Amino acid sequence: MKARSAENAVDVQGTVADGYEPVRDAFAENFAERGEGGAALTVHREGRVVVDLWGGTRGEAKRDEDDRGGENPDRESPDPESLPWREETAAVVRSASKGPAAAVLHLLHQRGQLDLDAPVATYWPEFKANGKDRVLVRHVLAHRAGLPALDTPLSVGQAVDGVSGPAALVAQAPLWEPGTDHGYHPHTFGWLVGELVLRATGRGLGRWFAEEVAGPLGLRMWFGIPATPEIPDGGVDLAPLVDVATPEPPAAAGLRLRPKRSVTQAYSDPASLTRRAFDSVGPRPYENDPAWLAAGLPGAGAVATARSLSRFYAALIGPVDPLPGTPRDLVPDPRRYGRGAAAAAGRLFTPATLTQARSQESSGPDRVLVVGSRFGLGFMLHGPGAPMLAQGSFGHPGRGGSLAFADPESGVAFAYVTAAMQRSVTSDPRAHALVRALRGCV
Image (tube, rainbow, N blue to C red; front, side, top):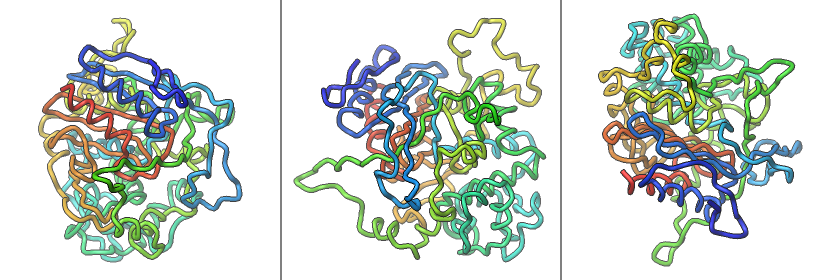
């Protein structure tokens, strides 16, 4: 199927189950009308794939070496010799990484290895310095720790060295009384969660996820791509992120729908908590850099295919089918994975853990995002600031476009992965168009 605009004609590849054709139409329209460049979309229903689409390009990104990391939409541009996006193409999903990272803490709690109501310092004694002795693991997951920004931002090299991020958080005093309010922790969330996993298990989050979740479920999803000096991309069919211009928002009642002035001011003011939080790593990271890809920061650096990200969310809410084309004798044997047996059998969360993960912990005006937000424990919840399928949906968007979530009531898991980064944080028009179409099918 081709997108309808001849100027932006794109061959959309893949399949949809009967009744889901409107989702395919919306995916094609994203290329024709909403500035899409290269993307994939997968939807599971009751553990079975019902939508599996991809299209556009995944060319090399050209970096402007003179740029200092500002919000220039032309900072990168796709190479004229761009390759087509393929069915197993992956991309950095930015903050959509936070959902799978949070799931690791839930799984450790489920296994009795981590108490979400314990102080962080129970596992990380140094952390209690500077007034943080009462910060709970729960506060970290719900963005209530009071640590969304650093007084002294880290360089990109420090951000990925595995030491400087946690050390900066040890030295940092909370910006509000922990547990009393919430504000999105864009970068610091990853260092907090990653260090908790390391302290509780002796394994880094990337290794833990690979061994306990990605391996048993057969996911092409990594917190740190498997790079080597000989193969710096780890053999991953990777779509580099490319900043693209954001199309004008649609007119409504004769007016242009634009962000509220307060939101625009917060993102443009270097002294605002919003900018300080998003600039905790500065200058802005070049996320196609091999060092960034290898680090796999839990808050923003996961690499995933849409198929795998959707499969992950499907496994949070119920059993999933074996991967297509898997011979019966190669279906993962739960006995092989020990404590990862639930993942090998196709389900990650128990009903109690599922309830725990998506129960509302934070809501209302967000000190960092400025607009209202809703969080469970590590997952964003459906709401005006981050629309998903329905009231019970939980997941996480990624700044610039990507979105993944599950909706237990309908049995739906959804993952949209794009390499064409637009100026969105929690609310992207391309993802919303897909969700609207899906809502009409379920």
